[in-house]
Image (cartoon, rainbow, N blue to C red):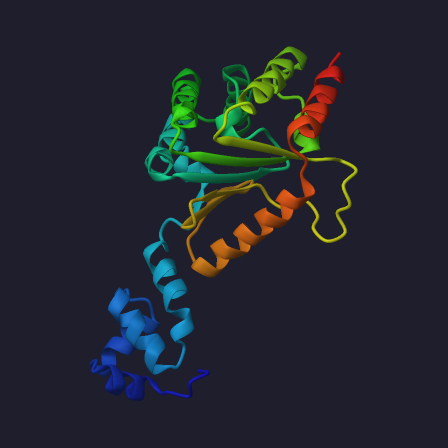
Length: 259
């Protein structure tokens, strides 16, 4: 519409049969990467080529309801991200709700997944799901992978599994923070949030994909401009966080509050 081209003119310029435009426009035929490049070029929208291709490739998996992913239980949902974890070298995660998955203890994982199982009335494969999730954490100990984790201080104080489980979880974070390939930042409750307030929890895998967990669904974002927005937001959140000794003070304070 912005280019002012008719379907007939676009088909002529792209050397397509005119019916091809109609089939693509009405969703009866999916465009190939080459079709999208030709479409964008002839419409003077070359800057949108990368986003269009990424969207087309990911259209079926961009929004997946939990009930679809978990219909056979929680284990399948845990296994579904293993290939992504194995090929990723740079992990970035932000969480305002929970401790990020790779940092979770078995007790914390069990309490969390048990709650999900019961709330969503899922088949009971809790033990298998916990084992898969714990096994995925082996990527932490591969020196070729880097992890940058940012959590809101409130996530340290949300009691999952009771006081003993949380105390063990927080102690585990202190231990993992000593590993050279893991950076853990905590955004204090009293940080000035005028410029950037808490946002949805998200994961960035290298510079190619973002995952967001909603109440009802799991989002997979691959459009380069959207991935870039999350990367910039992560950088801004990084500036709000404290690290090292200052982060340990906040974690230790959360442990003390359990008593």
